[in-house]
Structure formats: structure tokens, C-alpha cells
Image 1: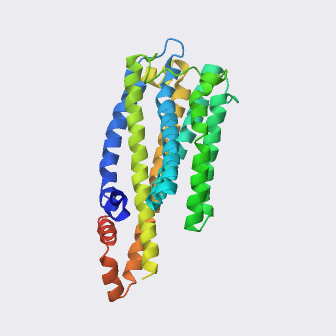
Image 2 (image 1 turned 90 degrees about the horizontal axis):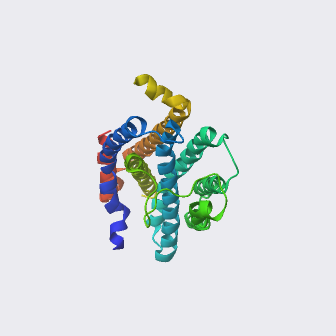
Image 3 (image 1 turned 30 degrees about the vertical axis):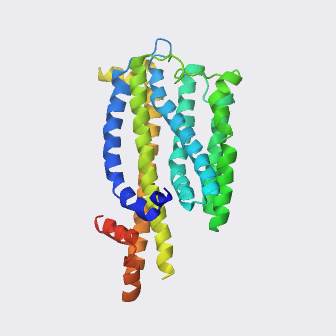
Amino acid sequence: MYKYFEPNKIFAITSKAPKYVLFLFVVVLTIGLTEALILSPEDYKQSDAVRIMYVHVPAAWISLGTFSSLALLSVGSFVFKNKNFALISKSLAPAGFIFNIIALVTGSIWGKPTWGTWWAWDARITSMLILALFYGMYLLAWRIYEEKEQVVKVTSMIAILGVINVPIIKYSVDWWNTLHQPPSISILSNNSIHVSMLIPLGIMTAAFALFSLLIFLMKYNTELIKIKNKGLDRL
Amino acid sequence: MINEIIMMNGYGSYVWSAFSFTLISFVTLYFVTKLQHSKEQKRFVAKFGSLNVEEAKVARLQNINREILSSTSKI
């Protein structure tokens, strides 16, 4: 099974995929923006301010999902000693970090008209900020450490430690009194969000996921070329 | 209609700034990543060009090197 994770085999696919993913992303984003900004209804309480949800929520979901993947891949690189897992994690992190920042900034913008403040040290906001710090440490570690073995160990530790924060973010609205409302979307129970808002939210999430995939593919290709550059030096 | 979309019942500045920030972040990240990618590709081509005939032959044996060179020629 591991032979499918060999960079030589993956590069043949990843080098060609970005242009198709970019095309698909532009199409889905255009539909998503039309739905989110024009076609979807306003909220009876929040009025048009609710439209911020269509960028805030998908960004938060993807940053959480990406960090969980980093932790899973880090465990994988420890257990299976597969260096490609570390390379995949490294390529996933920049998009995850940007989505984390988007979630924080758009959340702050949404907070002003709904709560009357740009920032509050509320459990969910604070735990999302902590996640951004973990992303920052993870990305910095790749820049600081030169030695391959050491950097894989350090970044894996950061990802595994940081993932403890993910369930805290998820359940912060249940465990503490926060300004955030309880979750409106659940896989196990009925959704409290109307389908006319759920559809644009789904489309925007798909668009954001495609963007994340696009950046991952471009970054992964860059990392492989970097490795091959070092290989040419050794010839 | 256009006025309604711009004003958004008085929430226009919040909604448009949130969407603008998101899109600007996307564009910036995309171009920074693309720039890093083409920089590495150019470095690879330059290094490959400096190899002697024997070294180039050895390097060409690897599929991935051939793939990188072919993708570079398409830029």
C-alpha cells in the first residue's frame, strides 16, 4: 500500500491536478458567492449580517479539519516511519493557517453588529486563537530547524499537542457560557438551520475545501521539487 | 436592487469587508504559493542545465525529474 505514497508516483498526478482544481474552485466559488450574497434570505434576527456566516463557518471547519489531519499524519509518520506523511502535513499547514485567520477576522467583523464588540475573551474565540498559535508554531518550526529528523519530531509533537485543543473548540459552546450559540448543524440530530441557508453554506464549504486542496497540491509539488533540487546537488 | 445588495440593510460594510478579507487572503496565498513553486522550478532547471552529460543522464533516469522538466517547459 505504501508504494502509492511514493513521491515519484504522486508527482505525476499532483503536477497535473492544480489547473483542474483551480477551474472547479472558481466555478463553485462563483455559485457559492451568488447564493451567499444575493439569493439566500436574510435572518429574522441578524438581518443581512448573517451572510458573514458563509465565510466564517466554512473557514473555521476547514482550519479544524486540517489541523486534525496534521495530527493524524504526524502519528502516521511516527508509527509507519513514512517521511511522505510529514511532507503532506507540511503542505497542508499554510492553507489551514490562513483559514484559521479568516475565521478569527470574519468572526470579529461579525461580532461587532451582533454582540456589539470586535473581540471578547470567550471560550470559543480564545481556543480558536490558541489553534492559530499552534499553526504558527508548526509553520515556524519547519523554518527554524534544519535537520530533517529533528524537524519531523518537533512538528509532530506540536501537531499532536495542538490537536487536544480541537475537541475543546468543538465543545466549548456546551462546556462554558459563551457568546457563541450552540451548534446549528449536526450529523447525529436535526439541523436548526433552514435549508435555504444550509445550501449556500454547503456550496461555500465545498469551494473552501477545493481552495485548500489547490494550495496543498501546489505546496506539495514545490516541496518535492525542493527535495529533487537537493538530489541534483549530490550527483 | 443593486443598492440593496450594497447596503445590506445597513450591514453592508461588515458583510463586504468580511468577504473582501477572505478573497484577498485567497488571492495572496495563491500567488505566494505559485511564486514559491515557480522559483523552485527555475532553480531546478538551472541546476539541471549545469550538470555534465553523464550526470544529466543519471538524473533523467528518475521519472520525477523528467516530470519536473516537462512541467517547466509548459510554463
